[in-house]
Amino acid sequence: MADFTIYRALQLLLGLIVAYLLGSIPSAVWIGKSFFKTDVRKEGSHNAGATNTIRVLGLLPGLVVLALDVAKGWIAVYLSANVFGSFLKDWGWINDFSYYSLAVAIVVVVGHALPVFAGFKGGKGVATMLGAVIGLFNNIIPFVLAVFILTFVLTKYISVSSMAAAVSFPVLYLTSKLWLPKHEDITLSMAIFSVIVALFILWTHRKNIKRLRNHQEPKFKFKKTVSSDNQNNN
Image (cartoon, rainbow, N blue to C red; front, side):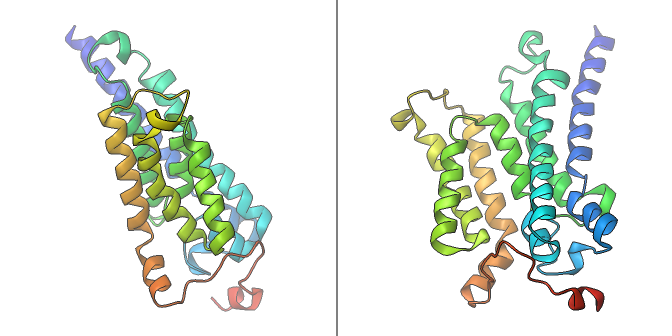
């Protein structure tokens, strides 16, 4: 029995390690260096994410980075439910299965922000967090995305849109029983996680908040805005 317990514990630990390694895949950095000979962390906002990739490399590379970063979060949560933690519901060691998936979601985002494959200098984790949230909260995620899109249409700021969507996330989840016909039961673990997500996104955007207060935050454009001359000089 002891050997069985150790085996299962190692399986859970392996799931967390895989989640971190998935998050550590620096799509923006690798695409920039491999195809454009450019490290996006040294250009534009210096962030290894989709928005800065569009700013530095163009729309298509940015969309590829966005898709890959979202996929990292979703795949990590999927594996937690169907591979590494699939036995938990029947095993009885963890009563609330969602705790393990939530831990995996947090770890994959940490991997994106502190990637072992890119010198622990990654992005803000918004897209990767989105992928994890899609896997965990598929009922309300369309409404969170709607908040993002509406805010972007009104402001043209990706940062403001991301923060608005993040803040709306726990509000929409905690009130989902009141307005969502096919809602899932609200659990304490998911409620805490939704609040953590909002606080995390706000924290990663602290520099954006400062620039917004100083009227220095650039509005988003669907094209490359960092000149090639500037790239060659850095």
